[in-house]
Length: 100
Image (tube, rainbow, N blue to C red; front, side):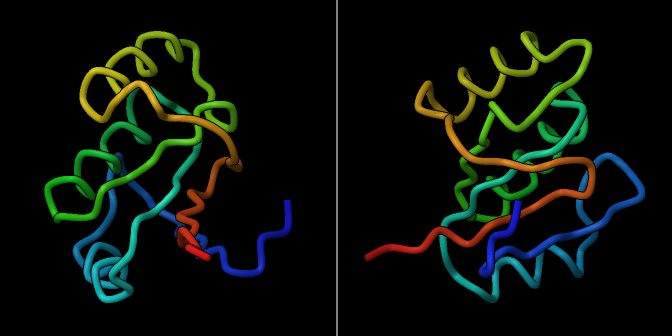
């Protein structure tokens, strides 16, 4: 997947680092995100972004894990049922939402 405006962030734990959160906040927009381990890493990053005032949209069709259905249910409950389309693999892609 080649998304010219994508910001790919590698991470070594469940969530994002303070520097990564600051970088995202500095861009001041909504974000799409995806990754592996829907019920762990993706969920942790979504909560971090939410707590930092950056509403995430999780692109669930590009996420996966053995407990994907559980992660999907928590994401829908916490961030809304409208979580949907467009995402990538293991290194998280936090793609800037472009409004036209």
